[in-house]
Length: 544
Image 1 (cartoon, rainbow, N blue to C red):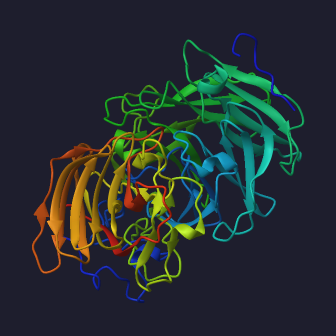
Image 2: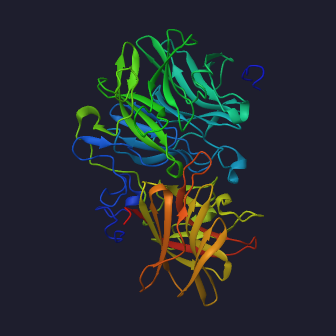
Image 3: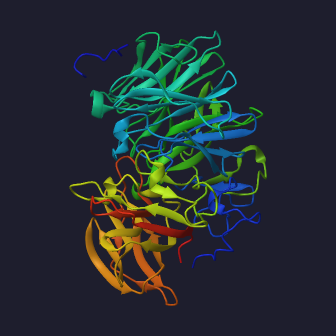
């Protein structure tokens, strides 16, 4: 079916210290990383928390509560596996438990597609199942389901094809009827300020009609997107961010009828705080129904869209998010607050980051830069090490940001350090392996070898800027990230001391995504090679 568009719009811990008591690597455990060395911890240990609750790029977060459990998902764009699933019992302490999709559902994502892929999803629980609706703005809107979010999700199924359809969210009404609200991507449709509601089959197999545009106010609320559908006390609510990612505000729309008319009210704005663009996220209640909370993101350039938690209250049938500092009924973000449900909660945890590669599977923190292939890596070839097999950098530019076989994870804090120990098996200077920071710009600290020559090389945007000869064998590489994404590089030969190399590099965000950090093994040649690199570990920690 087609969707109607109006005319004219057409010091790092030792290996022993970094492991859990049960012997599993902290990076691959369901419990998340140990708190002691982690760069950012929101739980203050006294019954309060500080924002952000996730100092990482979980863009466009949505949350569902089922019983005492909260599950969060977020946009993943071109990275795979996609649609991360995080779990919490208190909305403050989160761990990664799964991904809902293994690959982006189109063959073109075998190549890096910056800014494309999986945009803002919604997660819901209905009829005994978990549902995630997500768009890929060049293809359409998909749905995937699971009985248990920690287990395998169904293969994505297209609900409606269409260019520029984004940010879908379902509502199953009291009478059994189902609806889908979504927005439009200006880059594809020429629209950026409309929300449409369509009738939908209750099994989400298809839309049942074109529905109606239910809100449009270009003058007061430009760039209206990311809608979330709710029903409470006989009112239909659509919560949607307006005004753009970096500078916008959160709007609540309310109506007695599913198709409107909807009355708007601003319910969260920056005010006198430093939290720019506080919007787009999830309104959730506590298990006892007495408390309400709002999870949203804040754009922080190289760090991506980090996640905050705000208290919420209801006043005269409207949600008010954050703290009403001015008495005008519009909330402002909090920097810290008591934890939800007045609970001591579970032991503090944070999302996984470090990985000792002692598990049969990669840690859930890792994502490839495009749809991935099993031949790219092995955890069996050298037990306790990750082996990356060299793949050719895409011709003609041989640009690292275009390399699908990058194995990366999110920046975890404003300041942190990343370390790995790598041993390269190659006999050509065309093959490099090491650490990389990748966004719109990129930097890599890697090792290469030919015969009895081995070097550590720093590249900035594909250009060699510094190099040092090292002895043959494994080398330790480190990147220190400080405020604003400033990166410093150093390496250590076996039996030697750390040496700095090169100048500071300023990390930058990617297309709709934060900068990422991780490991790679790549060749500047298309000639087939059996070159590979073995990584003993990757450890993320507090910066010195």
